[in-house]
Length: 172
Image (tube, rainbow, N blue to C red; front, side):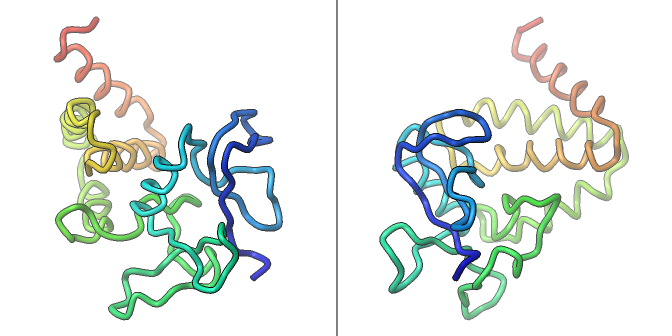
């Protein structure tokens, strides 16, 4: 269990210097592997959304990723056992409608640059509109579009989409 994760409450992340609640790898306790949150409620909400859960019979703050692609929902022993996208786990699991997030990733990967920009504008606007709902699919979908633009080595696609959404909301 040396590669398992834990969470801490009101600790300082040595990477960013932020103090808050976050996940860390057991063998590297001062470096956050999740966002740093101001409250344990937000950390636990993020953990649930991103397929982290407490380790049965573990210490109070032991957590693990769960592979939900298996119908038995078998816990995995290491983060290295899960499929990764650019070293992150934000796209593991299903969206709010029960569809695999991988379907959306495949859909945007097939888009041409113009369609990706148009979709990006719409998702940025919808993500901003859903600001009161941290579990909204629009938030991770915007991230996925950003990652797709980075993968294509065309960050300007996302920048244009963001600027268009900002102008549509009346900002210059």
